[in-house]
Length: 106
Ligand SMILES: [Zn+2]
Image (cartoon, rainbow, N blue to C red; front, side):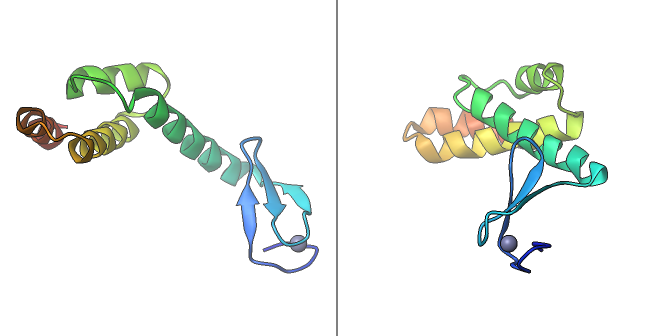
């Protein structure tokens, strides 16, 4: 909640500040929440970076994501999200089956 105008419409910036979308007031996040926000941004960034990976080799993909700073749990989540995304995008049955298999083993 915005400390200035009381609005609930608050955004988080990549720099780790809260910004009120009603009055524009900006204030820093508490350190405890900062760590959490950084994880979210890292996960989004890695998802964007790897989402076009093909063919999807889950074990290899997770390894690469972990090397970029994600935890094993985050890496699985990202890899599964990428597999689901690519399954939706492809019309190739063989590719779909391979992705479904990757998704199950991820
Ligand atoms: Zn405000």
